Length: 301
Image 1 (spheres, helix red, strand yellow):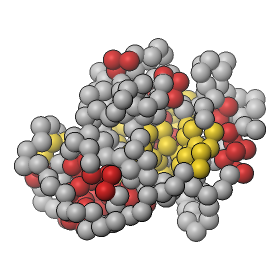
Image 2 (cartoon, rainbow, N blue to C red):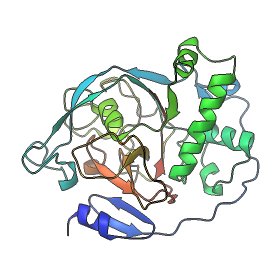
Image 3 (spheres, helix red, strand yellow):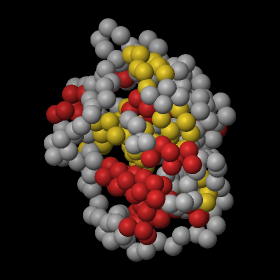
Image 4 (tube, one colour):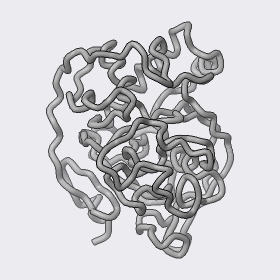
């Protein structure tokens, strides 16, 4: 049975990764977490701006509009899985992506803890146990979207925000998770590379086959298409795209009462080189929280 068949025939709470198939796992109970203690100073981040990165756009990077090749198969990459192939006759598709912005790094424990402090939202205690500059993990898909909604509100209403970001939000752009095509273009650029830095694995460029997460930005990659960090490894990253067979299409609205899996990308510290490629696709039940899954945010139209 193929991964795609397993995805659609399985029920319950699932994590689906190409090399492993789908595994039924339990969600952890949500609790009202104790108010986390936030650091007074965190190197590279702004404590006065929700611990977002200390740069001109608070860590957001503009990804230009334009087409790129999406997907892969074994004739292009011997490590490719069946669910990366565009169609039975075509290994890749040509996808035109509108301009968007994406976080230079994954959302950190400190950033997520600030959200918890300000909203008193129910989260898993496991989400707040790692060091403040590590990627937040043990968050569900709704947890990630709730953080995005909160971040949009504070960026829209606060004075201490770069004018470029304010203008985007005034013009109707949204803070959300990237969709699957946005994520892949940000990871591989327009030249079809296998890894964010090129076509060969480079253990020093990303955190994979490792015992735990690393601080975000440890995998900053000057050879990467847009100099983003940790697009390979550290944690799997949630997207807003439902897991569906290729070819990729933007779905304008979804019935959130129906069963669905959502795409996660990038692999994690627990994975080998085949799962941290730019085209690897995983699927996740929206209620699952796992210690190797996190997210990064985007600003899109």
